[in-house]
Image (cartoon, rainbow, N blue to C red; front, top):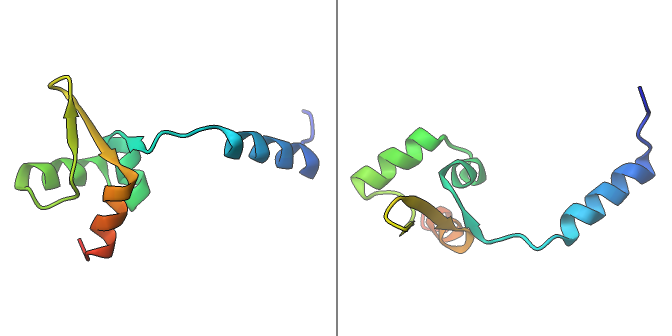
Length: 76
């Protein structure tokens, strides 16, 4: 098994941080971002009590990071 050096890890981190990341998250990503579960996200959508979300192509649920941050700041 090869050993990964600290320099290897730094290079990997630099590459990942340099990648352009979309501010749009699916339910799993939004749940991880908020520290909850996808089931909770679904319950919040059904009850209208969670963070704002958008439906794309009548089936894809997406959350914007800014709106997730606003949800947290507002006390959820």
